[in-house]
Amino acid sequence: MNLLNQSHLKIKNSIPYFEVPGIGEIQWVRHAFLTRHGGISHPPFDSLNISFSNGDRSEDVSRNRERITSAFGLDPNRLVLLKQMQQDGIVVLKDFAKMNPSPLEYDALITDIPNLSLGIRTADCIPILVVDRKRKVIAAIHAGRQGTAMHITKKVLRKMKEEFMSSMKDLLLTTGPSIGPCCYEIDQRVFKEEWEPFSVKKQEGRWMLDLVQINIAQMKEEGIDEEQISRIDLCTRCHHDLFFSYRREGRTGRQLSFIGIAE
Ligand SMILES: [Zn+2]
Image (cartoon, rainbow, N blue to C red; front, side, top):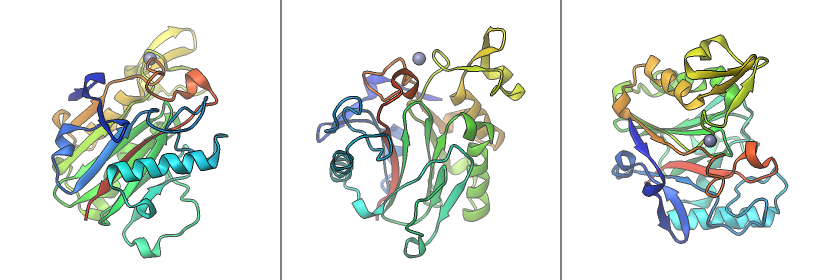
């Protein structure tokens, strides 16, 4: 596994971001995992908040979005964001013209459409970006606790096989900044027995959970090898100076992770 940390942070037009070397080398892919910095939103959304639904001024969010699309050369009308539902719904985009303009109530997207970018908004949940190097297919996943419990990552990989004939050996996958097992405590009500190997029991009925490892296990169950996986190994709650963290801050912003196919 390829681990990235703070030393991998890059900057473009005053916007700090992480780029995964293996994916960055692919000519037709654009991707970045952004932080909370480089935008104009005021506290507690400071500063690159990309969510319109958490109480931030919508004109500030729009300007943040413009800063991102202009810095990374993305077509602002072709950056697709989801109304994330904390479920396991996956949308497959094959024809941009036929896309329904109403909110996309899903937690993952897959596409092979050129000049289209897919974005995931998070503040502790895991953004996961996937590239099929051979078939020129990309996917973006929002994996929170509930999506993870519903095996969303595994389902996305299966969908890529079904819809695009993706071969697992051609994929590169990266998990972005998210809450780590150092900070993610859950209780009996939501704990699942299958998570036992990925959790440390803290006291009766309370566990520290490693959500990233659970998603990596789902990738491996579908045939992904360790060397195809990269991980931005930074806990959002520990590094709240760099990332929005819902668990730490409650009322806060969302950072964007995106992947796109360049023309
Ligand atoms: Zn932590």
